[in-house]
Image 1 (cartoon, rainbow, N blue to C red):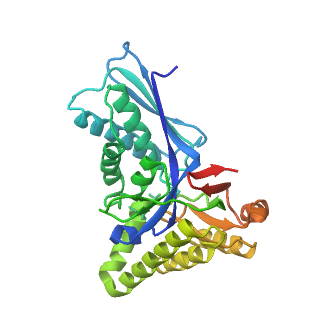
Image 2 (cartoon, rainbow, N blue to C red):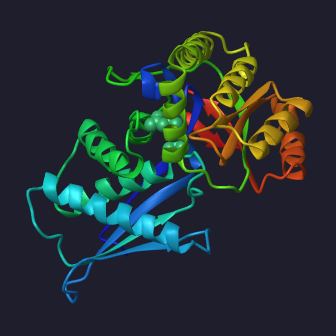
Image 3 (cartoon, rainbow, N blue to C red):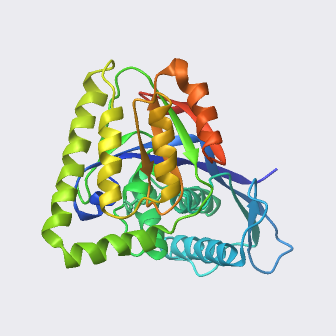
Length: 320
Ligand code: PMV
């Protein structure tokens, strides 16, 4: 039995990725179908803590991914030690696992950080509130991605749907009714920091054009917030598709993401978009509940390597 055990969900950005880095609003929800976990076992027989990543359903990790994971896990322990004003972590085995596909736009790095921060601080006997966990997770995200908006660590720490504007007070969204989504994975990893840099280069070279795209994405997120919190019958699908088209203009979609988005729409979805940093990773599509299974099959036929049907209600998502 582990002495301490903690876990954190993945996340899905419903609206506003990339534009959120430049101060526009975004909406994100926790995604409980996949999660990261951290178990810590006291091991007085060891001379120093042993940190390992237990690949739960991602059997083959490339050497590069293994290196990135080791770097992330060591960094999180270092952040916790600094917070605790302690030099050494007690002799223990820190086992980190995740079922969140890595580099898939589902917030794997932030989820690993949040699960580890909670478990490691508890192991040291510290009690952190949500905002302290969030601050530490943000430091970890800066280490991993360079200039993150803070959206991923915030929604994952909160474990609730959020309407997020960088550097502003976090606003949970009270959702009306229940909506059904299908999430589909291209199976192709994308690098968030590469995509964020790509957008930044475009922003520097054609600032007014890119600012206009960001404004359009921001106003879509605002409209979606009004629908999600007031109108359980209206669909957000059309806004999702518009958001996807704007992300295409930013150059962060990919042929595989576009193919899944188009397949979902052709199969009767209300609308669809890529989610997260892009260049690969996942799409999310709002679907009429009775078509969810059929749309899921069509997405697999169109090349998705994994799919999830998920419902969104006032607490976030739950598996169907
Ligand atoms: O790819 P993910 O899951 O890390 O999401 C990145 C979201 C961006 O808006 C592209 C970056 C950010 O820091 O918000």
